[in-house]
Image (cartoon, rainbow, N blue to C red; front, side, top):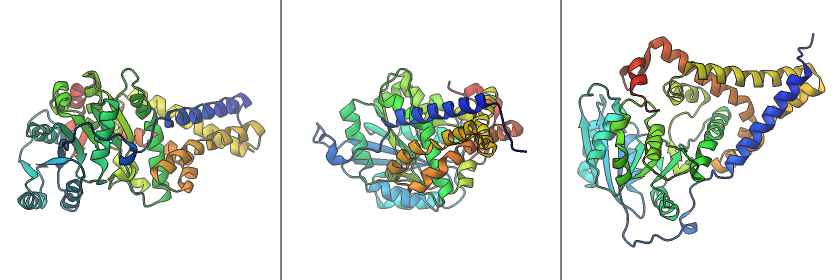
Amino acid sequence: MRPTLPQWMYWLDALLFVGMTLHFLWHLRWVHRLPTLDSLPAPSDAREPFVSVILAARDEEKRVEDTIGRVLQQKGVRLQIIVANDRSTDKTGPILDRLAGEDARIQVLHIKELPPNWLGKCHACHLASQQASGDWLLFTDADCWLHPEALARALRVAERDAADHVTLLPGVAPRTLAAAGWHIGFTLGASDWVSRVNRNRPRAHLGAGAFNLVSAELYRKAGGHEKLRLSVVDDVKLGLLLQRAGCRTRGFFGASDAECHWGTTLGEGIQLMEKNFFAIVDYRASLVIGLVVSMWSFWGIAFIGLFSCTLPGLIAFCGMLLLAIPSFVAARRLGFSPASALVTPFILPLAHYALLRSMILTLRRGGVRWRDTFYPLALLRRGNLR
């Protein structure tokens, strides 16, 4: 017996997928890569801007030297690089000390203890920011590689648009087609966030740990990482904090301009969200359940429609396939193959699986383990910025 459902359910499902497709295409109009230098106005000040680059590193002996080397290659800016060695147990500390001895622009802050009611990364960023003397602060990750012109281009965008904050969604170099589809899905999911800040919509905010470039004056006015001491998704919450301080933000695809070295397979991408996804929705279990049930229902009806061999059922399935259209747009801007866009509609339900998994693991453990430290859920909820 062929599976079937009432015809109105198929028609409604198709309509919902058409709406999702149009939603993504609408927002993608305002979501692009960083403009090239030659397409941006020349800076009004002949002096090179002074930027303090802040990295929090814990047990990054395999990648931190390459990361800092790429930061040192930034063109058109004066640099101060502050690396907070957050209780590393490997060779990260000695590597950083050697690099600091070789280049005076590098400062190393060794952190031995984590005070109560602080997340390790937030504490490291807070201490490093207190030593920063640049007019701009760039918060980036120790496993993120920057294009040599990334900072100069972001600063010109900030001047052109009178922005105080420029952020880049993390780029990756996926090793599998499924991983590329996963990152396209992540990009589509964030497209309305990016679109809203680029259109200066009220209460719109955005932040990404790969590249958060902010005016030092506004960062301190907003309260800095001291206000984010218990924020698991401190990069996103920094955007919220800045928005409340009157900040204007600009957001872009990171792609090869801010390429992070994680999530290169589908499994890694899902596992990566274990800590973050439940925090992004402010630990609201009812919201997670509602999102998962509704989204899986949409996809489930589409697949039942495929096997129902009825016209409305097939239309519902084709409606789901329409999501490949905005996926093609995103794939082209990210530099991914067209084939990755074709698999994206089938990968998208896994984002809701990752969200559900993040919630279940956090609730079962009673908190989050991050950088070898356990943080109780009650503490995280109490200190969460909403």
